[in-house]
Image 1 (cartoon, rainbow, N blue to C red):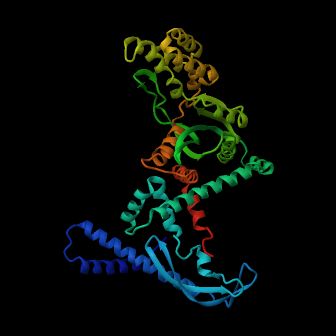
Image 2 (image 1 turned 90 degrees about the vertical axis):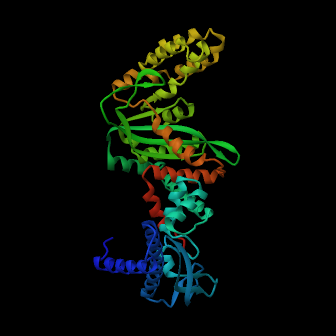
Image 3 (image 1 turned 90 degrees about the horizontal axis):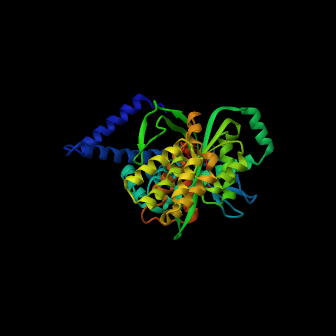
Length: 452
């Protein structure tokens, strides 16, 4: 918005004079800043009140309005309403119409601006939801009070956060309906054609607390990968192996839900189409070894490149070394160094052979069995030397980060108690924020038909 310089200067002069009167000898600049913020809040509240009343007066007055009951609403009087805005509580008067048939009332101004008496405005709702996706609702309420200089209840904050999550869920349901429409899919192919380059996808599951039990929240991350600097060798878990520190993920979008794998498949396909995964010239999936993940990928994208995350695979090796040789012994380090090198170079047959040799040691049998089963089932997805040579990303840290940022940092906070609906809504809202998709939800929230 472009504001008149003259108006800004005039208002600034009035504020300076008022603060000079109230604080002739302030203790420090913080006292002045806080005073000005409070004055701005009061000016904003009064300005919003007057704006709404002027807007109502400027509208041509109708004698009657249509009612949903097919009757007519007649003008009654200018009725007062209170809304909770970014400036705090604002009271204003506007025209009020009542139906003689059903007795329902309506206010044209409220309907046009999507506001309702006693409700939170769209501008404040966005700020409350932003606070709610970041930290616990009680703590968020304290933050909001510090920032906006008025108190909002924990329950109001929770309600608006979950509302944003429901809006994201509604977007995803729209995508699901679209992607089941053959005509829509064909039109989309003609519109966009084949997309050049590689697109990556990763899926994972992380446990979230819901009503005293733990439920698996499944996550999807869609992203692209770009080089960031020249390759350097680094140590990983005290072993000299290369890391892909020359690559990083970008343009990441996250989606999540608590569903069975089959139900989650619809969200997987819908979000894939949103990222044009089906149109990309090359599609790459980097995931852990969970069977449900690879079944979904095989069903929807059987020709995609499949890579088991290097770090998940490497985690099967330390338990073998520890149970066979004892932790931190010279033999432990020597065997682990060789095993990780074999894994890094994609020498999976040799690695399986060496693991089986240690399977003769009773204490190591379970660890060996788990590792050999994992490596055998994912053999073709662990050709790491070839994958690296062809420039593929081999770590699923992107979706692992999603699990930590969504479920770990928000849902698993100490003392958190979630209904399943609340957990899903809050997680979806947070995923939208992390994916830089927040504006889509804010626009939808502003358009909600709150007014009756």
